[in-house]
Amino acid sequence: MKMTRFASFMSLLTLIMFLVNGFTEDLPSGAIARINAPVNAIAYSQSANQLAIAAANNIYIHDADTYKELMVLAGHTDSVLAVAFSSNGKLIVSGSSDETVRLWEIETGKLRRTREEHTAPVNTVAFSLEGKKFWSASRKNNMLRSWYSRDGGSWTSGASSSDSVKSITTVVLSEYGKIFARAVEMSMAIKDNLKFVIFLSETGTDNDFTPVLAKHTQKITALTFSPSGEYLATGSSDWTIEVWKVTDREPLTPGNLGNPVWILTGHAGTVTSVAFSPSSKILASGSADQRVRLWDLTTGEHLHTFSNHTSKISALAFARDDVLASGSSDGTVFIWDLSKIISTD
Image (cartoon, rainbow, N blue to C red):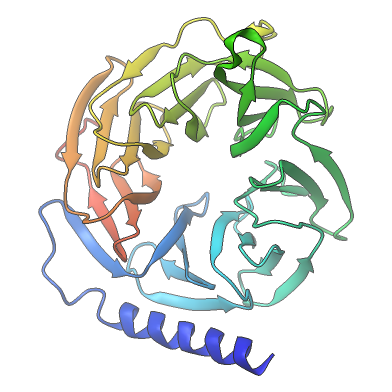
């Protein structure tokens, strides 16, 4: 226990030393700010007035206008892998390699609740739109858990009852809380090939997941819904991004999503992160090739590439259509001004 506390203290001290000097260094062209931290995940509050950065064992909350650090949420005993704000900005949920899910109050920084039911690192967390529920998922053992925000009660859903499911690679929830997407590897009987599928479900029926075949030739490594819930973007180890129309108003065809609206190419490595702008007009993608690329989703055109990170991109998040945060395993978060790159009309 003493060693764990000492390790956590040293981790916190190291991060403070990184963050103190975060704004004094020269900025690359287009960057508003640099925050130095070995980032695993980043998230903006829905009002875009706060930025959460998961770095090492802690969550750092910054003012999204001044980039001043407001508080540090400390308590996890291993790397924080995922963070998400509730829609009203009052709560934040975090998942960690310590196999716990923690719920925090933003106003006070108080830890409201810790759940220890996971038996593997928690890679993904998400709130429902109204904030009454949140979800957590472990990639390693295919476990998805659902929780009530108020009293911490839970129910549990596995990825699939099929023994052919090898692993969940990522989990996301649509902005309106109506559809899940889970990327998994599934071994098919024909030629023992690996097919790469997405499971979609109305959240009211947690175990009713429909397998739908994607076009990727290797595993899906990133997923995100557009804010409207109409589109789903998938990134893959095949270096491509696919953008799919998955409207809530029509039932999905079992076994097939049809054809993607766009297949976006240009990365030279596994796509590690994808993010829609609030208007859903712009998609940002990050990759193991250390690049952040911007795409116009009305035309499929590549708009710009940021090449300033020196290691793989670990997280992306939009504050507005013209402000993007990118985090990397190189220990930096850049805040980018996109106003000269895109039209916000």
